[in-house]
Image (cartoon, rainbow, N blue to C red; front, top):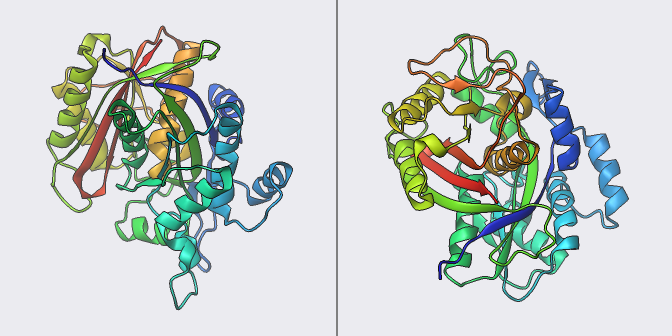
Length: 377
């Protein structure tokens, strides 16, 4: 008998709120977390989506006693706590952490590597706090990490290595990240506009997100989404630039949809990567058209959250599932006029829709691409 794997619980911590409900309500209202922030001393402010540190500290103190945690670790703890309070941790429970840069801010003004900057140490610290009994798994594959972490959990449970899994993903805005993207001249001088003719670059964001994944959901779950298919393909095109023909993303989508046994006509909604850079947006448009998905309603959440790196795929998966639960498609913020060569059905206003099959995609540096198909049960 084929083992089916489900997401039955999730949570997130973002500039729009410290739980899913507040995030969803703000998205429905069209509110964005993107604003001007002074990230690097003696440099101009950047448009970015950043959590208010004072509010974060207050929320953390209301939920935790210990203070020996970095800012990012506090975000992780807050996102995961509601899940572990409802779903038991056993000897067969996996703990998977997705991030691109982790505690990279610890490197500032340091002459030696602090222990906390190692991703394995970060994962172990979070796992130890909640009492996980298995060795943590770290997924760090550029900006597809969040989507791949879901796939890793699904495939490990399906293979019988674990009974269930908690997956968390997170990154924070830092001088290191801002400087890196700025060196590519990729950061926009205004709020980002994915797929828009007048876009001029990305906004960096920060968030943490958490999901609970299991092969044996209880009967009293409020919801469940089956992870019907997944795939990750590297097109090996360039260290930072995507394939001009969308080969890797096309193959990822095709493989995921084949495993899920769904056709292009059955995809009710696409939660795309949509970074608002010329090459990424164009590559996605080509890949979606090659898969005959140009008619499926599509959005990018980057106009609300910015690009949250290793957290983006998991956070955006959560929001897409909320869309399915509420029967409401959220517009791709700041989109006005098509700026890609291939047609896309970009959502421009809140609209009711029956959503059963969701396609979530992501792409990242090094030519990596990933896709998952989620089915509302």
